Image 1 (cartoon, rainbow, N blue to C red):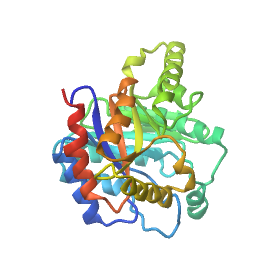
Image 2: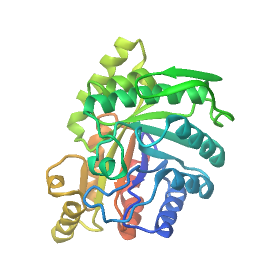
Image 3: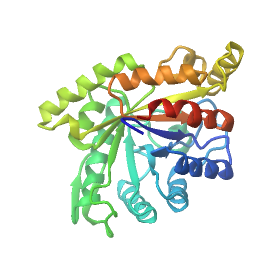
Image 4: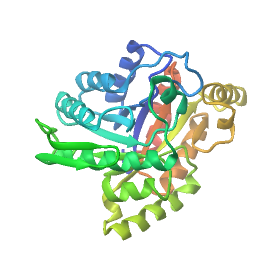
Length: 312
């Protein structure tokens, strides 16, 4: 794939382990460069939809794939003690032979916090938690003995052994904010994953990151940018097929999704045209968000009819 890498990002909800296993093996063998799961207790639209846990799934992905890089986009920093998360990530990196990448985020889905006893703080406080968390995680993954005393994270001469297989396990920040999230990415991250935005918004996001990098004395070219886009692909461009998918999007995500940018709806030709708009803005990593049950016919059409349009 010249210039652009496609990834699959799946919500492990309303599905089975067998379907998820089939999906990550498909990604590993069909030319994708990335596979990720999300970190939630609940689906966005209901607390009654069955939902699997991210760390355990990553262990299985590490053991059952051979080539693809993989991770979670993103771990909600409040859900796990940061030392425990570092230990889990290191173990998974060893299981995979050094293919893991990890994302952190501030969290957003208040119902799951309330249900499972996590304080749901203000946006500012959750971003403060994110900033402390990524600092402490980076240090645990790379330094010998770490002492860190913040408002939310406390470590005292903490050692993480063994270290990951990778000398620097890549850390991503997820979210679209241009003031705090972009600044945190500029300070601490290897990549910035921006979810559900229109292609026309990318220049402003990139400019924000460059401004923060200038303040931090960092070359913005050292930070990868990925976009995360919902994929609703019809196997033809017929209007009735596309409309059925649009209704599926609304049912899975909510009525706001009908007008929210960052969701790709259409047949193969239309999807390719929509993706090219992102590539024209310099995007080199596009993660396609899927909500089960997986439409295998559509996914096969993406591989055979859309991905070739991005090969040299």
